[in-house]
Length: 249
Ligand code: AMP
Image (cartoon, rainbow, N blue to C red; front, side, top):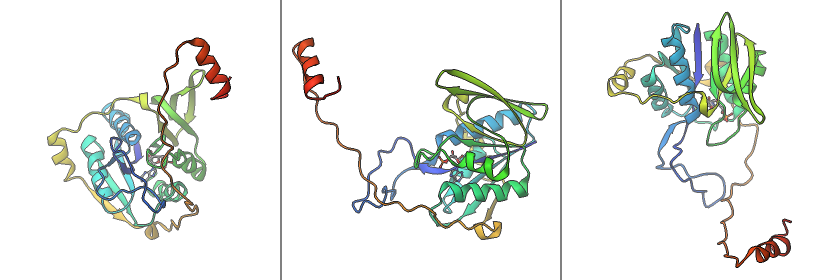
């Protein structure tokens, strides 16, 4: 069974991003980039399924600029067998990525696609769901446990009231939540081995996909600065301020 794992190159989660002065987006010049953390969890899960003898091949896919090769090498250092880069300089939106992934699913015929639940740069939380819709495959999002057996996936999802467990027929799309697993650190020998694993590069046009953006970003602004707090003398003053100044009670 083949597993396809889309991995996105995003601004590292430790970086405090700055909005560009013209308000057109976030400044990513000279900023550390890394694999989207939810995608690391997805790769780890796929590699564990391979180690358990359930999967036979783990294919990592990244869509974007040439530097996404680094993200694919990182995925291969965790244990993916090979990588596919869909190279483009166009700003990719979730629908375009979902269409590219659909074209690759048609070609590669994986039984499971494990996506991250969301990319931490755009927080869209759309790509996996759109891919499932385009493929007419079942989907189970926000997985905190994944068991694959007998042509089906049993997925435990974290929901408001507790845990929900679904069974979906394969092929299917699963998206990862934070508690699914703790990704391993890539060891130096595995980083070296990853350099020799196959990495294929294709262009969106090779897959017959038009990736032109459908959404326009009108404006990006910094969040409002938090104003300094005040110390109150007693509960009565606190209640008074909440009532008359903050007007929240
Ligand atoms: P999003 O819908 O943008 O929040 O992304 C959800 C998931 O879709 C990510 O965690 C990745 O697994 C996948 N994904 C999104 N964009 C890309 C991309 N450019 N290349 C590869 N995978 C992506």
